[in-house]
Amino acid sequence: MIADGELDFYCYTACGFEDLQIVSKLFGEEIVFKGYPSSTGSGSILVPETTYAISSTCMDKQAAWEFLRTFLTEEYQWDSKLTADGYMQAFPTNKKALEKLAAYSASDSFILPSNGKTFERERYDVVYYPLTILTRAATSSEVEQILALIDSAKGVRAYNEPIMKIVEDEAAAYFEGVISASEAARLIQSRAALYTNEQK
Image (cartoon, rainbow, N blue to C red):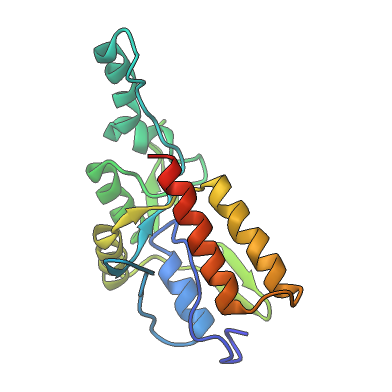
């Protein structure tokens, strides 16, 4: 649908600096990130791979923090997350590790942190039928666009099972022809508001 020009927008989760070239080729032209609509406008959101927290009842919050902070260091997010074939499945939250990934993504070779050996960067095929896209090193403008996208993110995606159940229930009624789209939207809003108020 994208390649045929039947789709004007696409919900996409960027996981690397090379992703921009993939989406651009899917549309066959330059793309613009718009983000999700919200009460404060629109913008992109972050999708965490893993989240951590310290319980308010923790007996030793300082020790807990010392443990958790190791996952936020440059060493952990770069040295241990870059795989043997030079792949990282998500953007680091550590700024220095992110800068390293940006430089690495724009090069044709890389040094594996675990052993210091230099490898030629292998490019991979991404298949979106009928297109097969061979990735290349990211350009400086692509790196800058992705960094700007990350910097502009206005929120974090979270999955709320009760809210999703409300949406699924009312959407099912709409698709079965029981209620109209506007009625489904009204019921979702009403039930979701009631649920969130009950959690306060």
